[in-house]
Length: 227
Image (cartoon, rainbow, N blue to C red):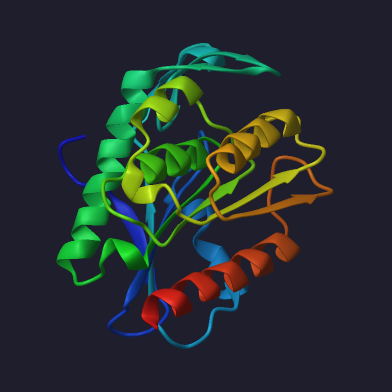
């Protein structure tokens, strides 16, 4: 992943001053969440650039070695956790960091950048965000988990020790069980991050109420960054 990941970009206004880098789930691609941008109901200013990167296609062990877009390999699944390829997690975090650096080069500082993700993409948002060497505006983690809690605890960067987090999960999720989302929530709470936690009566998906709540949270983050 030495080259920048390909991505879909959507700007809510010319010359955006803030950015959201939003990672899709296992087997999807960057187009998966692009349609949510208008549903977020963000204010007209400041303008926001949404970057929806495409994960590379790799064999995924837990899916019989089938090649699909994935941020890292998952060796096994169970309700208590995931056994994941930590080197692959690190490689994806590095790739997301490169996208952050591109936003910096385009005039958007880290303090106006949010990392967001759904499912496996949310696992990367948690990991890349909490280990980033400069303070970010926030982390959005949807229907997800922390894939390597011990490694993240060891590598978490003090620069993002107080980064706000919006985390949400479906109470009927049969892909990433709610208890994994709760464990991630507890990890974040134990580290005393400002946390917004929501559950919704749904499966492994998102709903309009959730998207509107994310939009309000982003507007608050970017309003504070723009002040």
